[in-house]
Image (spheres, rainbow, N blue to C red):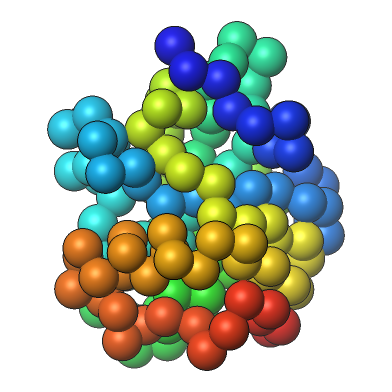
Length: 137
């Protein structure tokens, strides 16, 4: 099992709290890669056992309001902080994902735009990329 970075938040945040923003790694396990597609927006936190819990939104129904990557991230974050029931959640080994930034309430800070762009390119969703690393709802 791989562990996550020291700056990865631990435990589910409360509304407005800080969470990690992830993309799947190039070598993600098939089950993880299959769940995360269409330029999914992914947020989550580390667990004490070394795994990571990820909430995601992949816009399965092509809702135009969820086309932009950041809108998917905000939707996944909202589900996570409210503890809403969802099938768009998984717990996996941290080796399957790459942390690209943070979300805290209405703000996203992308620290690794290259990794985000590569993920969006791999899923034919590059047109949904944010204009820059600092995103405000």
